[in-house]
Length: 217
Image 1 (cartoon, one colour):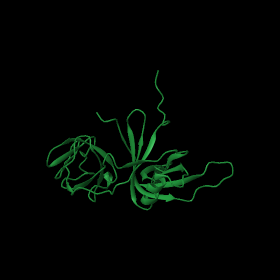
Image 2 (spheres, rainbow, N blue to C red):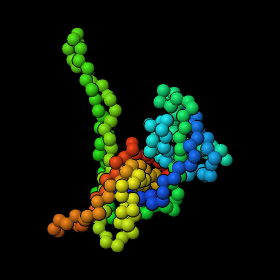
Image 3 (cartoon, rainbow, N blue to C red):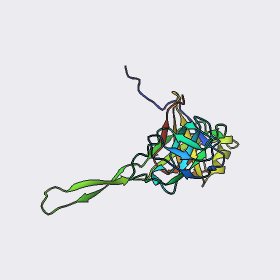
Image 4 (cartoon, helix red, strand yellow):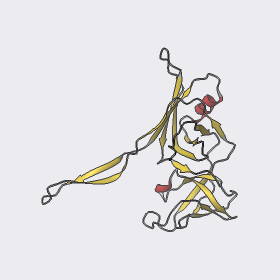
């Protein structure tokens, strides 16, 4: 019998170190793109991709599939489409250090909005029915709440990251994780509804769709 996937029990983390990129390097066209860069990363390192040349990759998270002293192979980053990824462009990689995450505990609400298809309509003199076409997707945002704690380390991390580009990670019980990259807006004023738990709200204006990574081999 199929096991129904549920997010229950997932743990939320906020990356607390500066998002510092390695020097930009040229990216190949491959099923697993190779970035030419002076490299200090190890296999299975997790990075955020940023690029002026390839906006489709902006904010995407990837894992290093293979590394050498002068290049990194990005697992699952397919750049074979030459229209989207014309040769010669470059990207920069932002390493996410394993011990620089702060857990955000006690999350009453967590959800994504946006990502809906935007459409246009064509109408023709000789065709009785209008035709609809896709023009992309609406912007996405992540919204979540945390239980209020005046002197909590999670609150301090959220205050320090307010207004900055941020990375959130949601760890699932099967070892996989979802990453959310975007500007964090943290409201430090807790809710005060009678009989209800006091919470604060965070909103993340995402750079694109979240990235889901399986458990590292």
